[in-house]
Amino acid sequence: PKELTTVTTFSKYVALSLFIFLPIFAFILGMRYQTMLTNQSQPIFRNTTPILEPITCTQEMRTCPDGSFVGRSGRNCEFGKCIDPQRKVFCGGIAGKLCPSGYYCKYDGTFPDAGGTCMR
Image 1 (tube, one colour):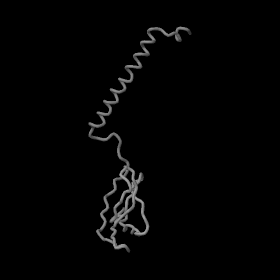
Image 2 (cartoon, one colour):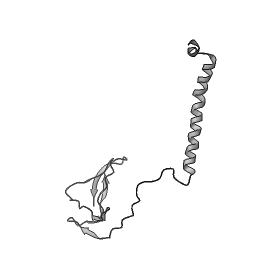
Image 3 (cartoon, helix red, strand yellow):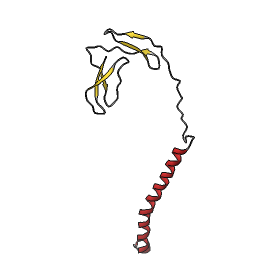
Image 4 (tube, helix red, strand yellow):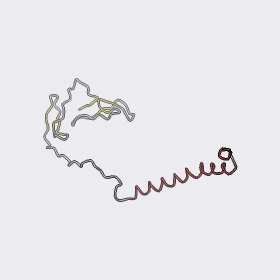
């Protein structure tokens, strides 16, 4: 029918009001929802992952062939790996690779995802 496809002054005002007031209304509702989430004491979603007890490893140290020491770490309290001084081990980078205990990462740059080599 022609009545449903004709653009009238009223339809222009309805469209204009929807384009103006609907985003404002949605923004206000979103702000109230965010305030409700930050002010509540109980979480909305329950954590279904089990809480693991912290592991405490003994403070034993193992001497590596180059004279450095590595301690126990991880879930099974295993000794860390010794690094061969002739072999360069990559650390840092975008993946954030860590050096074994007793070593530090000497970065090749100052940018956030810089990589480097594990040093003693």
